[in-house]
Structure formats: C-alpha cells, structure tokens
Length: 397
Picture (cartoon, rainbow, N blue to C red):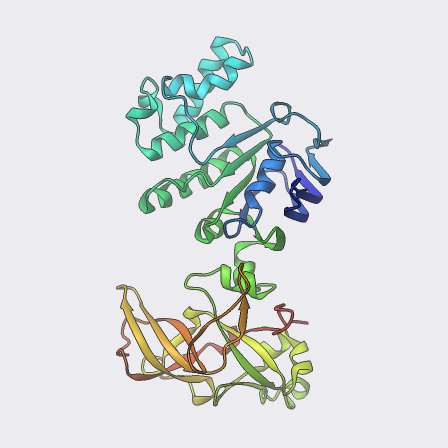
C-alpha cells in the first residue's frame, strides 16, 4: 500500500486551457478518497495525472516514496478501473481478469491462484468461463474490479465506474466497492459527479470546481460545515436553500442573551447563543446582508412541529407538493431577497418571481400543506449557515 501526494499540481494544455490549478492532496495509506464535482471541474484530469495518462504541467506527484512525474504508467504500480469497463469481448472472464498478469509473464499457477481469489471475493467463480457479452452490467463491473485486484497494486484509481449502471444496481455496487476496498486496504482514489456516491463511499471527499479544490474533509463535515456557497449547494439533495438576510447581533454576542437575529424578508429568525458562538464573526456584519443557508431537512411544517415559536418561523406559499411516502418534498415561495449565485456560465439567481425566493423543504409525511395555499415553516435555527455575499465564504470564527 502507499500514500499519494499531489503538491501544487497544475495541468495547462497547449491551447492555454488551465484544467487543474495548484491542487494539493495528501491521500493516506489505505484511504478511500473521492474526487467529486460537476462535469468539467478537473476531477478526471487529476486522476489521469496520477495514472500517468496526462502529463503534469507543474508541481510534484508522489506515490509511496517515489516522485513519479516522469514515470511511465505501467511502472507506477497502480490499477485503473475505467467507466466503460474496457473488457476484451473475445476473452472469458478468467482471461480478462488474468490478462495483465499474463503480460507480466507471471507463472500460470500464480495467475490461476490470483484469478480464483479475486473471483471468490467478487462472487464471480461461476462466471469465469463466460464472455463479457453474457454478463449483466454489474457483473462486467465486477470483472473490471477483478482485473485491478489481481495486480495487487499500491493504488486503485476509479473513474466513474458506476455511471453506466441503473439506479438500483448503482446502490448495490456502491456497497460492494466500499466493502471490497475496506477488506483489501488498498489506497483508492475514486472520481464521480454524484455527490451521493461521494458521501456514502469516501473516507474523505475532495470537492472541485473549475479546476480548484474547494474543500476536502469527511463527508459529515462537508455537510455540516461547508467552507463556501459552492460546497454548501453541491453537497446535499435537494440542495441547500439560499436567501439574503440582514444581521442584528445586538447584545447577543456579548452576554449570550439570545437577542441576535437575522431578518429574512419581513420576518426575523432568532440566532441562538450556541449558533452565534460558532460564528462569532457575525458580529462584524451588524446591519449588513449575509447569505443565509437553510437545508431542506431543517424546515418543518409548523402545524406538525407545534413546539416551535414565532421567532423560528417563516411564512411561505406552497407551489408544489411531492409525496414520497417517508417524507413530503415541498416547493414553496418565500417573501425574501435572493442572492446572486455564481454558476459555470456567468451569473444566475434563484429568484422565482419578483422578490420571492423559491425554497424546498423536506417535511414530515403528516403535513397537510396544500398547493397554492399559505403555510408556515419552522426552522432549525441552530443549523443555519451564514456566508459572506461577496466572497461566498462561510462566516465562522
């Protein structure tokens, strides 16, 4: 096994396009690291640089105790699992799994032993004499994994290996890959655009946007403490609601009286002392606008959540109700101002009409809210997020 370190790594193409900017990653021995972000964010390019399939424009890449910037891919002791499986259709499963070992002139007895071991781990033993065309998508993906396993590499690299599978099979294969990586203990870098995959599989997750690393942390910390607006809205489904609010700290920051608040539209939400203590810099925004982030699951129908008071409530108008059995997803309109949110192509806003902001709530299935009717949502104010409207960075200590 091995560590993988990217130190200030850049990738700039001959046409001037800068795909990866100053990427710093320190991937621990046996760690499962996920690179996640939208299409074109540089995650696959970063993975291909680790594999040696893309040259590094500047910076240093280390695998184990070797700098491998100029080392040929076959000499880096890595195994790459591709999106399209890249199986040989004319070969059996047995021959596909063992092909890399055959190219290394590994003794036949050892090849047979390693292939049998990989097939047992992946529950492919009964399929060894079949060809890829006789297998399901999930079985073909396991064959691709088997081909990587038998090489016993220092590092696994996986580029969106589940993207060609249907939704149910993706869930199953997520669990299988996570279990397998844990059992083998091989350092793994996994690329996906699916934040659910990232959150459920990675020991740590690195979020990229436009070639820049936005944040790297455990999945729970990314969710609970996003460093900026991009991470806040990318992690979590449905995505975090964002509105503009005006801060009034008053004495809340000095004596813990709980008098601090943020006014959203015509309604004021209390900021409890414990939340203010986690973001003491909010005091610097007295009388100023901030971006307020509210996750859909931190909203509830006030008619169901009767223990909340008016200082934690927001009046809305329901636009759409989606019953999902275990919860009801409600799209509503809030009388508030919307922040401009940077998108990949210029600027966009999340306005619905006029000065009303579209928000989404995940409510208890007992809710009775109805379309085109007013309602009141209560807010878990302890879980509010605050961001600077200019820098889009989280406001903390």
